[in-house]
View 1: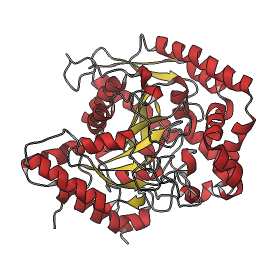
View 2: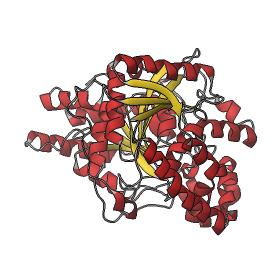
View 3: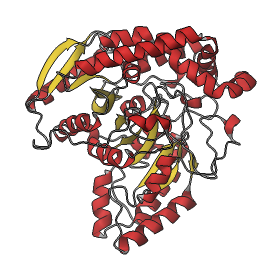
Length: 478
């Protein structure tokens, strides 16, 4: 039976694939077997698409053998959050109330990755309606954080995608990010997660939460893989209105060596991002400054006052609540008491947002986003904790709605600011606390600066080993 390191990067698997050491079918069967072996305990997947995956793998092999190579994802298995449409497969968005929601066609990005030779292996769990940063789903089940001995939360809302990559069940998975839903599970599962600028990747065929803030992006083993996937996903879709602002990819400071950050201005922002932060999280994030100094970047502590303005402008997440209620009002009104209360009691608040409140926030977004862009005229990136707390025990999140809400706010605080400001962001592993739970560093850049922040992330990972650590998955065999 074929065997290889399940935590291999996409790039490493691609080398083995093109050398003939492995076939796409070998790789796909290996991950399917691994999912069958461990996912009964981890609960990352809501749907395994074995027949489709093997068919796509064989097609990828035939193409490669015939001299057709579609690029970095050719023949590579991946998973998608259960918000992405797949023809003939329910898009449940985390609730069986939507089990009859069976699309006739694939989401744009699923179709695009299929054309590029990628192998779709399954759909991963999500928080109901993708509305929560903790990762809890009290109806379909909460995926298990592979780094904890007891059940700790995986982060949300792309909970299953985080666990799937973190546990080495797939080398890449797609998530969505409206308030942190790619970055939080990436941080909690010690993987790399990219939050893209709204308008850079098509959302057509992805279950909506907020048309103002929704973005999609990958969770990967490392930043080099994230860049490879991003380059393939960032393609214009004329049928997605959000992509009217799409920018073709432009290289950053390509004249420099790959690991040099000479001339880069990096800032640890004082204030809200570090306020009431867990002490071990704060220490690990600040320690990364020494790595960047060794890479000859300029490091300073400074103000980023627009972060406070972003928090004040959107109290209690009213933009998301209003748009989420509008998009899902029939489901909410008819099935309110059947939905997970940690979701339904938040989303129902959107029903009462007035037009004046909503338009005041939307108008304010234009102003503060311009202020954020101006800030990055003299700064390349901000360095902040991805999440201000480590992953919580599931029992603590389920003790009451109030307890859940407090933890959820802590999970979302640092990431949601980036959505309000429409910044690009990437989270990378930067350490573990005394209990062995992961800590993430978030690198914020201006909108459309994904390649720049990914360069910074790759330089960091070339000089650290945090992203190479792996959890003890073997103990979870079923």
